[in-house]
Length: 91
Image (cartoon, rainbow, N blue to C red; front, side, top):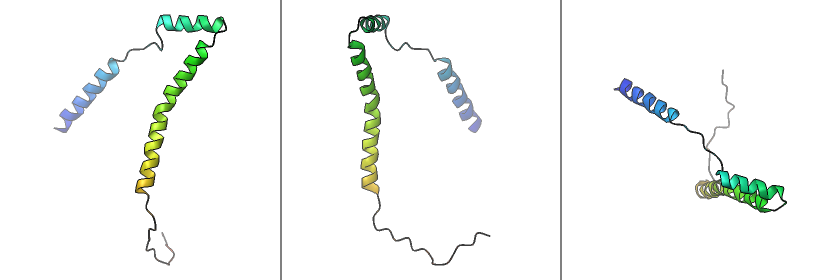
């Protein structure tokens, strides 16, 4: 049964890794339009870059907020450790 599971996992990994395709970041028209506007001195490219940075920051901000709420909710206060006063000898 373990060998069958291992074989299925390896087979799935081969199928997933074999199906990888490259993707373009922008369509050809969008890239050409932004490049042309940048050369002409327009600020559309700057707005596009700011929008990309905004979209990049949103997931990190969401994870940070969830982590902060989790930390505040599950943080223990006034924990008594009940440790001995003797020194520990690890020999």
